[in-house]
Structure formats: C-alpha cells, structure tokens
Image (cartoon, rainbow, N blue to C red; front, side):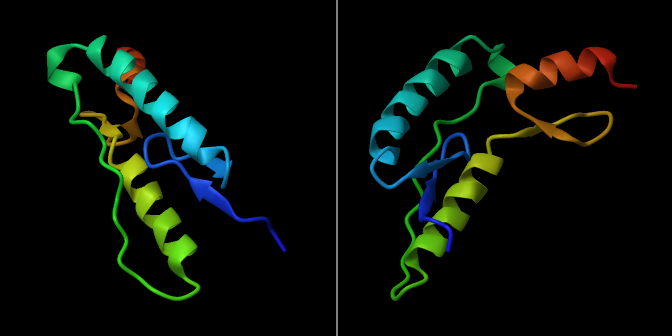
Amino acid sequence: RRPCFRVCYICGREFGSQSISIHEPQCLEKWHVENNQLPRHLRRAEPRKPEVLTGGSCTLTAENEAAYRSAQAQLLPCGSCGRTFLPDRLIVHQKHCR
C-alpha cells in the first residue's frame, strides 16, 4: 500500500503529511517572487487553498484532487498550440512555437 501523500495546491507536487505544512508557506513565497517578475499581462491571481467538504475515508483523495486542480489552474495556454505552461516557461515556449 502506498503511503498517504498530500498534494500542494500551488505547485502540484506530493509531500508527506508532516512536510506539507512546511512546504506550502515556502512554496507560496516562491510563487509570489516568480509572479512579480513576470510581465503584467502574465501575472496571475494568488492561488487559494481549496476547501473540500466531504466526509468519510475519501477525504484525503478529495483534498488531493482539489489541490491538483488548483495547481493545474495556474497554467497558461499557448496562443498557437494550446499546450499549457507555467508563465515563465510559456515565454520560452512561445519563442519556438510555430
């Protein structure tokens, strides 16, 4: 059986139940620094921690799914091909996309 990991709602990576509480504030700070360095038209609204209102044993799965969707919502689509990227990677991609 796989250990219970929690998904970061900012970056979408998995962390243990103890380390997620350490990771999230640092990840949010990193997100702010990177977001402020982007051109104004690519800046995004601050990600919000999703609230899941479910009961029972599916709580962790529902929370992880909501956190993953939140992280995926941070991606921006390329105007040419439609693929999604983080804003700093989108700039690099658009230089070479046809």
